[in-house]
Amino acid sequence: MTTDALISATGAIRRYGTFEAVRGVDLTVRRGELLALLGTNGAGKTSLLELIEGLAPASGGTVRVLGHDPYRERGHVIPRVGIMLQEAGFASDLTVAETARMWAGTQTAPRPYRAALDIVGLAHRADVRVASLSGGERRRLDLALAVMGRPEVLFLDEPTTGLDPASRRATWDLVRDLLADGTTVLLTTHYLEEAEELADRIAVMHEGRIAREGTVAQIVATEPARVSFVVHDGAGRVVDVRAADLPPLAGAVAPPDVARARVSVRTDELQDDLGTILGWAHERSYRLAELDARAASLEQAFLAIAGTPSSAAPIEKEAAA
Ligand SMILES: Nc1ncnc2c1ncn2[C@@H]1O[C@H](COP(=O)(O)OP(=O)(O)OP(=O)(O)O)[C@@H](O)[C@H]1O
Image 1 (cartoon, rainbow, N blue to C red):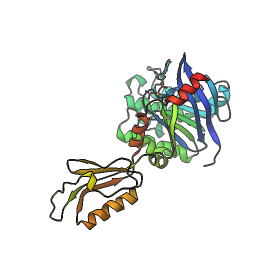
Image 2 (cartoon, protein in one colour):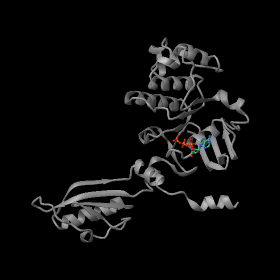
Image 3 (tube, rainbow, N blue to C red):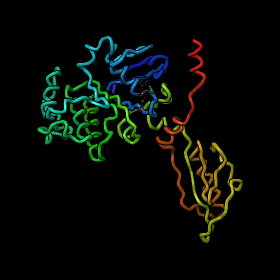
Image 4 (spheres, rainbow, N blue to C red):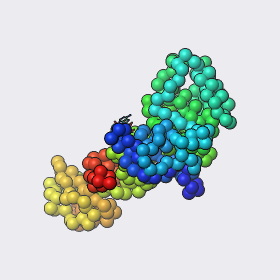
């Protein structure tokens, strides 16, 4: 993977009337990587994606795809990108094969249309009318069309919504194959597992801004780890421990919580504080039953970002500008 950016947004803004849905976003997707754009409903993902796909002009800032303005220089960009929108408008009275063949006719150097249907597992439905496809099969037809022209850059807007687990995994395998072939992918999804499986980097959008960006490890590192346990004595009886009985924990972000004998600690220093707790238990010949120590999950980090109220300062700054 080289470091050149095939997609970049700098201070990108999208307004609907006076409402600013995208509030000065900086984003880069490098050649050959997959960036997953996450965010709560209404965070501005689709509004941003549409700027990058060239479907709408930016109200401010700069957007570049393959070195071009995707809206004003659409003719340079479109032949080199594949777009899988959330809702595709197929002619429902055409068959799958007719739809694919027609789409292939619009591409510069398409895959054979049957090969495109084959890689999404839809070849056996070639003669079925689009109107008769299931929701998941339509999604796969969308994907077949998006990859038909062997795009350098692929936009996937919630590609596995409505797919069963097996089809979802098959789609992930296909995306991995495309990445291995050097395709650059910008993906939006509400499935955190999908982002963890596929993404080189993740950007979490919140209220029109990129709230956090990085690898999964970098994003979860910003959230405290958790340790929880129930203290037993040597005879296996539950010991009624209080928070004040525990040793000082250097990384604890809040006092330990004790609920129905289960002690929970949130800490920024998992290894050190776990060592302290184990030493404390050992000295007292306690057993730590149901001991669970784990780093933060992507879901935890996501929920923490989603629960953050609108960052007042930057918005006020914009209003004053
Ligand atoms: N055409 C429009 N006119 C006015 N407001 C709009 C328009 N399209 C979107 N919005 C608003 O802009 C904000 C961002 O919407 P957007 O669809 O980009 O969010 P999203 O992150 O893609 O959400 P979801 O996950 O629900 O698809 C929302 O508050 C939405 O109501």
